[in-house]
Amino acid sequence: MTQPATTTIQALIFDMDGLLVDTEPYARAAMVSLMRDHGREWRPEPDGSVQGRRLRDVMDIIARSHDLDAPIDELCAGFESRVIASLRGELRPLPGAAEVMAFGRAAGLRLALASSGWRHYVDAILAEAGLAGAFDAEVTGGDVQRGKPAPDPFLLAASRVGVAPAACVVFEDAPAGVAGASAAGMRSVAVPRRSTRNAPFPIAPDLTINSLHEAIPWLQALGVRHASFRPERVAPRA
Image (cartoon, helix red, strand yellow):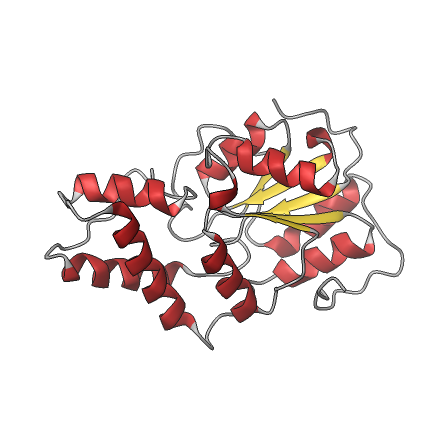
């Protein structure tokens, strides 16, 4: 459902975990700790089926695969509290994240976040990474009835910044996010991380790159540019 490349780009929509910030080591340690507290040894899902999904959906899958009967809300709260506590003072934006956001801002594009995390988690991560207030709109996992790979988070983000889906570019690291962007009728750029580098992408992205630095020349080739752009840190919105 990706639209023709002739459509003018007006908005950039970003995933958060694994794309703007590397929370993976903290999430892995938190999951190991959580499972041990419930008498289990964590076994990652071998097919990458949980990548990019809302935490509640992830925990539902993990609870079934690990034969846990604890309430899903309790598991989610325990996981998120562990992650947030472990990364305080440690988190930085991944290479190219601040630069591509600054490029988009300088080019007059709208910037949106579409994360599967819940609001308090997203707020904590953005604050730690110095990205709080950097987006024109933020969509979190609690804002939609259906999470990725459904298109709902991306369509809501586009609506909140007042841009048609065909004029949006989505940056994602996981197959579920790319599938959601395609279903929304948006271009997608995949930036796989360690856990998704070898994962199958049933829906192929428009572009696959190694870091967000590579997104800038691609956007420039599609006509997005600003003569005065300098690759500096993105400034929060006033």
